[in-house]
Length: 136
Image 1: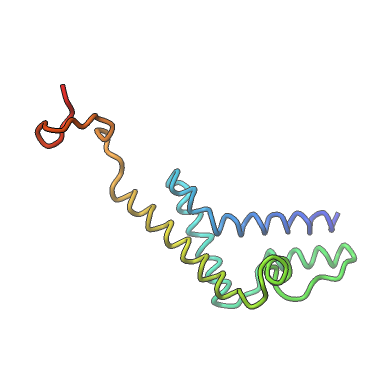
Image 2: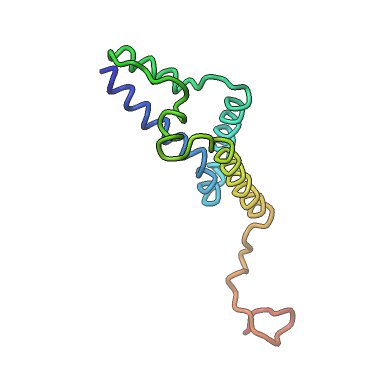
């Protein structure tokens, strides 16, 4: 049972990281996603800057230990991502790219909120009519 919980936490942790990186895209679809995504981003920044242990990693390691396995050393990212899928030492670059992606998505969302599509934007523009208005 503990091993199953630990494996489930790995999947949940990966889903969290994907949402952290790309959840801003959901805010382009609906602004309802903006508040939870901002909360996830703020939490991730605080954990990284304050160098806190991630509670998800702590739970996973505890559950591996209860399952009779030896928990890995280091962080979730160091164990599963860096050195496996991405080169060791690329953490700072990956964090910077991730933050740039998130900030860029937030700029796009802010522009859309500031300039929502107008209801008359679907009207046909006829050249030569006053102010490019729709033809009659």
